[in-house]
Length: 494
Image 1 (cartoon, helix red, strand yellow):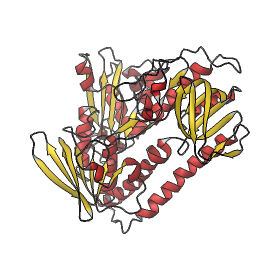
Image 2: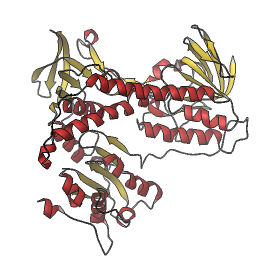
Image 3: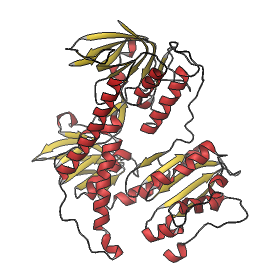
């Protein structure tokens, strides 16, 4: 049995804990069976946004006439697009693997890890493993056992497939499969009205596929603030046939295609047909691969690991981060959690001694997220529905993008919604429009590093003319400052 100071199961954000440990001279092992860097690099965030960028370009060209520019899309080499993106993202994963292999004090084990006891992990090696000197060794299907003074679980998640009648016999795609198709399907049925289904619905619809998008809730992305989800639903109707309030009940094969029966809340059934079927109904944690029954680690009903606010499980010395925790299922959240785990394991410890005493705890109050439809969506903090459910007193304002001159020029339907306590504390902010994922950041900084009030945003100088002036105008609307220079071009737009 090989012994290490830290054993990390998962080569995504968890590997950052391992490299931080090696900076302290500790011995670390990383176990990963797939591409290094986690799902985000090769099966999620990065390739999907690269595809969506192409869709944005196509959509912009097709809409150029409204600006007085005569332009058209003559051809789209779909296979070349997906091939180039695949080469880029897998090239990045390969470079991360080489970097990890070349690093001192860390060993990469290629295979799947499972617990033997609380801090012993068995690895079923693939064709090659790596010894401590960085040299490749033949795994040949061998199983090795690793003992860690500390263990970090970061095995991520995978697409979930609901129990639809006939699905087991259907030739369906998941979000993992849909990113690198060699040919664009002429028609596509997407089951799932969350952010994954919405983003892929926009992409395929903008690229010219006839898309039927099915969601169980009465609007798409239902976890967002209601004004946001209403806006996304309305915008997606320009690219897809949207069936909100419907649930897929049966899947059947057809002549070169697939049939999907969907049923509304009042039991009205509709038969949808498409060349391909995409299941985008969320993700499930990969904890069922870990043999947790051999440990004292507990999970919730959905399979997420139960952790305290320091991200330690119920077993001393076993930590978790990323999608297996499931509180904030985003890559940037996993990176933040890796920092918390690293601090709690390593800060103020002597070289060779694992067990820092930083006592860092997670705080998700200012954790942002974004949805890359058109328009983009970005949010941080609470929604109005959450505040009302908690009977929290709040004030709200919604200011359209055309309050800013650049927003008026872009002719966007975007808006900024701000939720604040009566004393000015920022409770939430929701942005719909171009560059929303970037514009939200000043609000995050105000909540995380400032005093956390609307005056933090309204009291700072904003570039003119820039879209950030729409954020400025919204926060100024709730500010108690006696003087205002916030722009308002809505009368011109009208």
